[in-house]
Length: 237
Length: 237
Image: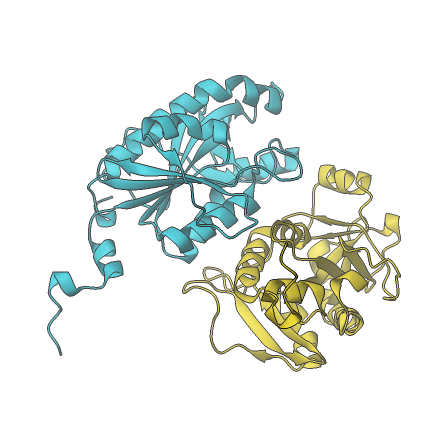
């Protein structure tokens, strides 16, 4: 059996896996949600696309502490001119970004509906994760996330999600998790509550009224997560 | 102004766009659905993956008449061992296949639920298309397709789809259409009815009882479409 190669000769992928996290991919759905983070991390809009011609996806990037951060979004729907939300566009931009950028770690951040029956209130931020974060030093409560492709939902969907113990409901998380798992990239989900699913107010109105202030809270929470992982290895989380 | 280059010097993409269709991509969800077509077109399972390591997607390919056919599927879910159905995996395999194969034309073929209120019966096959097929020489009726991520549906969903004039309901079409549109690749949708959405029988049971015979009908219909496009240009359709 040959002895292991000295550290300088180890392949790059193995070194990245064993060493500290250096490349973080943040996946978000809407530019309005992303702006506090773009400002906090001093990210700039990427001039050159890493995505194929035709793709509407947008990317901001920059260095923050010891990390290189790429923040990607599906961008505007070419037909309707609105942000492309939902599982399909989230899965596609996550897939293309993993292939092009080979991130060490993915953060899917965004707004969500919260279930007051599970203790969620407007502006609460929850962390959902397939990573253990066993020492729980990030001061953000954990919540179980359920993902669906509509902003509001039928009574049947609401019952199914509640029986599934979900605290929060978003439109992207499960799709990002599916792609991240496929390519063995650890991912966490930071979700801020813009509306109460099992409340009295119309979902769309509540969402729009709360979007700006909730987005600020989301930015603060994601910054805590990024500060926490800075300098750490995946195995430290 | 420079004269146009002689035909032999024209860029490949322009030549492919102007000439006959040569590369057809068939996107399907389940191996059981695909086997009649794999046999009819004498396709073989691709030995080398064109997809990145980690992707579960499978591909069959071969030549049929003047066409090279690639048939792709999301493959088995690594956790549950069942076929990965639904919009997210359909979108991903369509995206990765467009990037790797640059098809001239996409056919999304599969099973669907039919609305008897719109005249659909078990084993009917419908064509849904964003391509005109203005001469209507393919003897397959046109139907409006609606896509959702569940096999059965809530009364709210059923009402929404019916008010949208849909004849058939599948779990992949809109996702394939979204990606095909993004990269300007013409696509049609061939859908065979395995169950009646607005009928009395439980959806899952009806689907399984009819799957084999409906899949044969689907194979016949897709072969008609492929025979029809063989030797034609996109502008002939």
